[in-house]
Image (cartoon, rainbow, N blue to C red; front, side):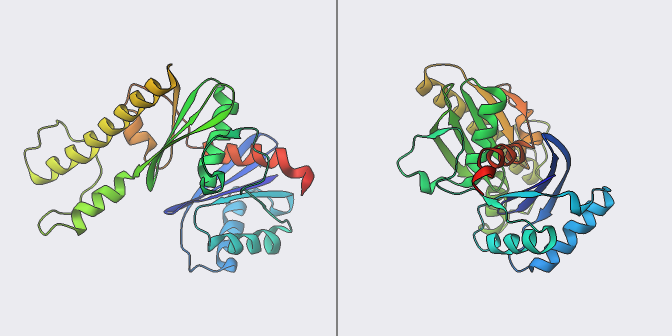
Length: 257
C-alpha cells in the first residue's frame, strides 16, 4: 500500500492507496511544532481504526508547501513505516511539461493537481484549488502546464475583515439568501461568498479567452463543495485530486528510488 501525504498551510491530507484504489483519507491540522512521534502515533491510530495494517505500507509520497514539516514527515515514514518518501520537487518525473518562467517556483501541490487532472480528464483543464489560497492551474490537452493565477483564499479574506476592522465580526462562511444583505453578517457573507464566486467565474472566462477554447473545470480543496457548486462552469469536484496526483507521480518515479 502507498501512503500519500499532502501538507498544506491549513490542513494535511493523508491517503492510503491499495494499487490505484484509495482506501482511506484523513485531514489533520497543520501544526509545525508537532513532533514526528506525535504525527506517527496519530497515523498509526487512524490506520488501526480503519483496520489497515501499517506493515502493508510499502511506499510513501509527499508534497508540502510547509518546508519545516518535510523532515518531520520523512522521519515519520522512516521510523513508523520503514520507507523513505518520494518528495515532489523539481527534477522528478511528472508526465507533464512545466511551461513557466521558473519551474522551481511552482508549488508541489499545484504540480500534483495538474498531473492528476491531466491523467483523469485529458482535455484542456483548469484546476481550481479552493484552500488557504485560491489557485487556478491551466493544463493544455497536450499535457503542458501553462501557468495559472493565485488569489487569497476565502478564509483569509474573511479573517482579514475581522482583524483589520474595528466593528466587523468574525462570521461563518455560509451562503446568504440574497446578495443584498439586511444586516452586517448577511452583508459580509454576501460580499465574501458571492464576491468569490464572481472572482472565480471572471478568472475562468479570462483563462478560456487566452486559451482560445473552452476547458474542463475541476475543483478541489477544502472549500470546493460550498463554493464550486454555485458556479456552473465547474463540471467536477474532486477532493482527492492531490492524493491521486501523488500516487501517479510515485508510480512514475518509484523505479529510480
